[in-house]
Length: 453
Ligand code: NDP
Image (cartoon, rainbow, N blue to C red; front, side):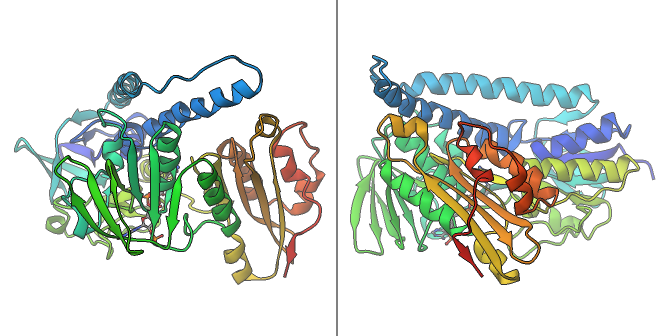
């Protein structure tokens, strides 16, 4: 049977573009791709990239304050959201162009429209064309989840944050995960009075407890009203466009805007997966094996749509491994072990490996930890604290987890991840001479365990 293409990729985000490029440029495959929105996907268009630029924008406010304490005669007269947004839009357009060009230069044909599956080898384009391919890759990512009872009430998700015409005076953020915590810090840093409401006992469930408590304390100190153990009961749109929110503590308050950061779900709705016979997980994500192959041999899936680890670099690895396996003659499985991640709160929280709780379930541990006021902010009179922690296996001395809350923690954890991936022991950390004066040096100066057993 002849096909129009060797590979058809649905979704022009990080995972899909990497797979398409490698299949075409290194595997010599005839590749097509469909993207219904903007090339670049969540990371580039409404995720990591615009978020990080907003983190930088917010950080400058704090830097200006600090500069004054260092003797600079500067006065921040306010943040110009519209000016920032215009620059942000231009940057995203530039990146979108770069993503498109890179794929096209590799020989990928791009259809800027929605595509759905008609059968295991056929894709149906929105304009009615039917195209066939030997292999189809689902790389449609995820989409924000809003609890059904609040859906359609005009509240925002992370998709809309970057599109706001103006910054609100007050904002309620629902959720305690990555997105909720990051936007709480960013928006508070830009001058919005943020209330963050989380149903659980402490934010950032799944992270190390010391990291969670440190981040929560730092967020509170910078002015975020953090309400844990509290959930939204009802949301009412007021005649003036604002919102009245009632919560499980019996409170009823008004906010200019409400943002749901209550998780993300796989973007599989209406994709024709049933028509092609592709099996899904209970939560709607595509079921794949270690090769990113679905139950239909010609159909693969990578990235957030498979709900393995929802991180851009993981999607890229999965896409690359797929292309190497299917088109490059190099069977490769993406490695999901010891993937580091960072939450861009202020200060940042970064982590690799096991939490103390997870490690304890596997056997006795030694916990090394420090908490201190870093020189830069302490000099300016700041009370902000840094936390660094190593979780060490008592039997083997191997470092099982590293958790950092500090300015620049995301940059630090990248190197800790190399050490952990190499199987570093605590003795290896101890053998390393400190780089002085830095914050990061403390990670090689942790002498005595704070807890054992
Ligand atoms: P998360 O899974 O991190 O957090 C979702 C939050 O919403 C949790 O606190 C959860 O509570 C809460 N929640 C879920 N359902 C409800 C509900 N019905 N009512 C009230 N609260 C609810 O998802 P995010 O959307 O923040 O992020 C999605 C993923 O994107 C992350 O897991 C991460 O992998 C990725 N990401 C990575 C970033 C980075 O690398 N810096 C930045 C942003 C996103 P509970 O804990 O109780 O379940």
